[in-house]
Image (cartoon, rainbow, N blue to C red):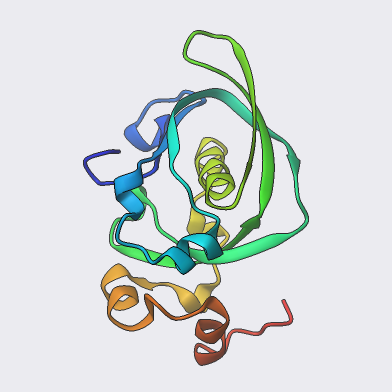
Amino acid sequence: MRDAPGVGLAAPQVGLPLQLAVIEDRPEYSSNIAADRLAERERQAVPFQVLINPRIVEQSEDQVEFFEGCLSLGGFTALVKRSRHVTVEYLDECGQPGRVSAQGWHARILQHEIDHLLGRLYIDRMEPRSFMSIENLTRHWKDTPVQTVREVLRIDARE
C-alpha cells in the first residue's frame, strides 16, 4: 500500500479471503495538493488503521463526487459518487470493537475499502464517461472542478 502509494488495501486485493482492510492517508500524500483542493475534498491525514469485519452502520444521503483510483486497476481513474459521511463499526487488530465516524476523503477511503470486501470495485460505481488514464487526468483535468468535467464530458447532471 505504501509503496504504490495508496491510502488503503483490502485483503481480497492480495488474494486473502478475509474481511480485513488497512487504511492510511499520510500527510506527504497530499503535500503537493493546493489547499483549496484539499478543502473541497475535505481531505486530512488519516492515521494507520486496521479494520476487521468492518460494516457501514450509518451513511449520509448527501453524496460527493470526485476522481477515484485503485491499486487493483493501476493507472486509471473515474468519477465516483460516495456518501459524504459514514459511520463504520469494526474490530481492531487486537479484536477490540471500534467505531469511527468519518467525512470527506476519510469517508471515501472507508467506503472504497469496504466495497472491496463486498466484491465491488470503484468501476462498479463510476460515471462511465469519466473513465480515463491517470496520465490523461493529470495532463488535462487535474485542476478542473468536477462540475466542469461533467459538462465537458457531457455527463447528465440530472442523475
